Length: 460
Image 1: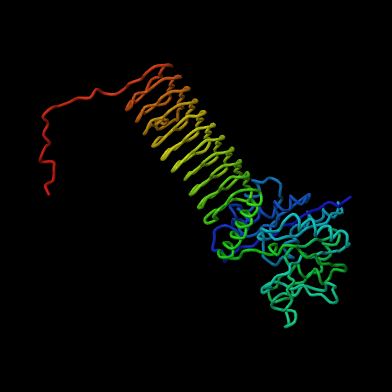
Image 2: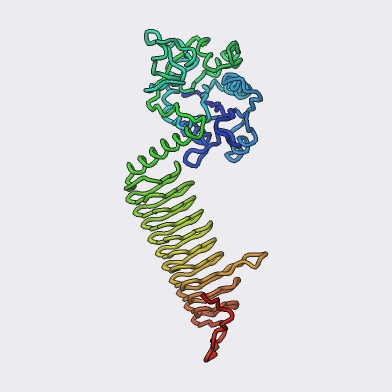
């Protein structure tokens, strides 16, 4: 039976080079904080308990952790190194010791740590009986990273870039910043750390030198070492993540004929034979079915889209679109909108907080807000559901197969019955019974032999 697994995530850094009012670990890669990527990987790997070390901008980090609801935070009041950061979780480490656990330590600003690396390194750590296991990666350009130094294939030390001699500088195996420790050994190793260095800090890497039994696990992916200390590095991380997500989707049968401007969040799910066209952003917990066409120039956030839907130049937020519906171009679906099967939404239409029934057509230049629209309804051009009186919002109800004439204003609260018709240009303030025609407009007045007032016309 496996020992319990604990994790300590280092998230106390300031990230000054980001020049941001928020901490570096909350900088986003594919619309999610880097810290969330790390926490998700740790959870996916089956780690039982995870704590986070906070420091700079601690209020923001702890507030974010509170939204997740399962991660205790320990404050590092002074930034005195990675070893000192882990020391702040003393009570958490003691709890791990009591359960004979192993402890993972990882950086909260290295988003590409993955469950396979965590699981693989844990198995190696456990089977080797190591006090500490360092996760390494072999890279083409090791500049800036601590080198893994071995003698006759035996791991000896981690030597930082500035301390490398000419031979050590050639080593391409580097420290990823990911470690496994036996909990029963970690406190003792931390107690042996000193700060006799130029920075006056306690380095977690120094535990390797004092550990009796140590080993190195080499990760399959070099991406585990990637982090961001600047905006340009953050952009590079986003591009790596973007390409990985698109490749994953294409492997699953999604058609992306040209990837220019396409950004898809890491938790988005898309079915096979769906086509994603350029300049499209899809994010949040969006789920898209099979055989859809999304884009170009669309923004989809936290939506559920069923099979064979077409969204062209659409912005959609927290909405549901059923099978064979079509929307666009220049359509805005605001939160709590539900387009049922076969609905057609044309250009320059906004729908908000509304149910739109099967096969209803809202062709163009229309606002439908806070409404319950039946099936087979037809909206003429320029219709408005006037839902707000300046204090309160009201709902409009439209029955099946109703016909809403061009430039109709429906003043909520109002109900249009099944098969009812509103005449073009009407402002409807009363309920319209089923199978009725509602006309509410002034009579056309004709004044013959009218001459324009020449004084009002500017002469050329």
